[in-house]
Image 1: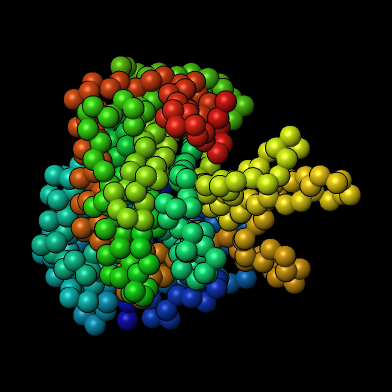
Image 2 (image 1 turned 120 degrees about the vertical axis):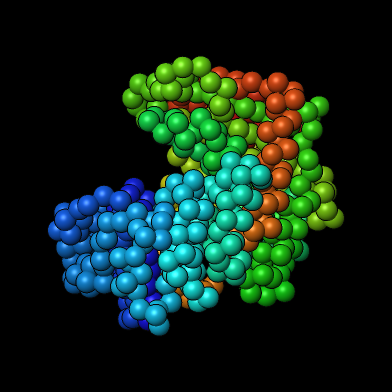
Length: 481
């Protein structure tokens, strides 16, 4: 018997991601028969009203078949205070002693410690239970340890599942298959053949009324510390001995430990901070960050960094990371830029010879493509080449293949948490190493007094981000001048 308890069950994350994910898992017959679902909130709400909110969040699919009724028959909405043992008593009274409870904390990280302590005091932090934590945990290494220590007093490390939802995306997992399931790529995956790597996470939305949270974290802590460093690890890690959770996570930790610290002297050449001002975004007039905040602030809404990994595989290969709000496109991609051929036998006057490029797109669409050079059709005596883009995505080239439904990343993560597979979750030493490097960047900014450069909403960030690559003769895959 299992009980999945969603703290913050009536909030934004639950309605947008978690409950729709559980619906799709139910529809696909993937939820355990003995699973009960609890949505815990501080707010009293009629069950019918709550179910109607879930139905609207799911959309048309909720009206098809009986999956919605099957999923909601498992669901209990309970209003209580989860920060005290007394407040949790109504839940404790209803979860059987034989159950294996799983707690998902879809609440502010400031509540993690008090909820974990309350669960322990209420007798709900059992040896067979698990707890799932949403990012970000803390705002620096010190606060991360404070929160994580409090959770650790109630739950063993093996019971703690720290979520980075980008790891649940199909294309991210396919990166592991691409690297380690094909002899075509892995022998080339090193400094001898790769010129540089780019990772871009672009958002068109602004901060809006989330500015109290964002002003404390900024782009560096909100996106780069978790999502982007996790993607970097999957690109750069050594082949694990197997796909057991610790085998994969051991290799990711090695990458984080190999990141070269960014000193105050290097901060201006290796990093760019930015903050958007008013412009046109998605066809509409967009306010600047200071207008949304209603006052002055040095918080960065954009960051670009050159990261170097000091190990044998990646020595001399720069990793360029950038992320920002109010950019030109909502786009997340990883670009593996290979080196050009050492000598061209072709006539440069009849077309440029482009280096191979592997692009892993995570959003708005999920795709993996490889650009190679190909002969142009024709009878010209002098061979002419052209770049062609080959898709390596599922089902491409197979007319009989049916494209699978694009899954919500949380579907995979919830399913893994239910089965106890922690491979796609972040271990404590991973999070500590990521925070350590990000804290060094933040300290370098402070010591160098590096202020955010302005950029117009709807652009690809400050011009200095282009210069970050241009100084070495490179340019961004998208958004360059």
